[in-house]
Amino acid sequence: MGNRTALTLSELNGLVRSTIESVLTDEYWVEAEISEARESRGHCYMELIEKDVRSNTPVARASAKCWRQTWALLRPYFERTTGQTLHAGMKVLLRVYAQFHEAYGFSWIVTDIDPTYTLGDMARKRLEIIRQLKEEGVFELNKELELPLLGAAIAVISSVAAAGYGDFCNQLDENEYGYKFRTSLFAAIMQGEQAEQSIIAALNRINEQIDYYDCVVMIRGGGSTSDLSGFDTLALAENVANFPLPVITGIGHERDESVLDLIAHTKVKTPTAAAALLINRLRSVEERIDNCRERITRTVTGHINSEKQRL
Image 1 (cartoon, rainbow, N blue to C red):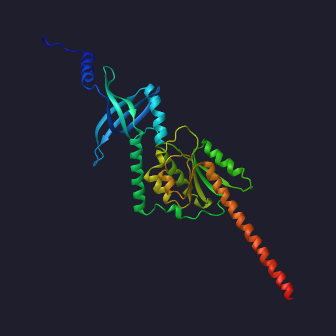
Image 2 (spheres, rainbow, N blue to C red):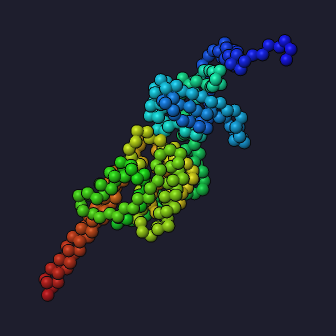
């Protein structure tokens, strides 16, 4: 080794740290895709990625952190504005500064997130899915099915513990007209990235006993965060569009319509609104029957009176 002076690893990393701190003194806005996001002790840890536009292969990766005090302010605003939590595949615009720690390495520290950028990317993805569905000729397919007038056998797709599912069933059971409905729950995850495959699996189970049901109702209610990312996917939209029963959605959100809402036979705002729709349809049928009964009675009475006079 001779007279060469060696640095310890902490000294070398300290040199890197001081260099970064002296050169990268600003904050930067960066466009990136989330490949992983998780929370721990109030902090948010993200893995960022950039993909080649043509090949979709990664060309850059980086770690980012948002400390608890900042995240507590950014998260509610971001989720309220976009209607979603941070998740893999989401495009984000972050304001960051560089930080290097001798023990933990390099990270970008997040100080701000622009939700309007994410909203724009979400809208672009929805438009692309809608365009593809229309090209396939299936966009209006489920809407063209006839919702049975006496639709009382209902396959419900919902999470088991959802408050909206309980509200839906209670409204049907306690309707003021005394109508009887038969509901069967097909449990599914109704929030986040797993929603797509879970709902498709529920649709497949319903399809195995399709003759027992008049329609499908998808409902989601309750929860503090309206993460609707799972409802804006091509695979789920294609399954719903091609499903042989009318699909009613009562997903319970106030923001822009999801692709699932657009492709379904009928869209209502809440689970209770879905129940009211079914009750009102039966009421409409009963009123039509009553009107027909009155018309028949009037017609027959008229004929009897006419025949009496003729006799």
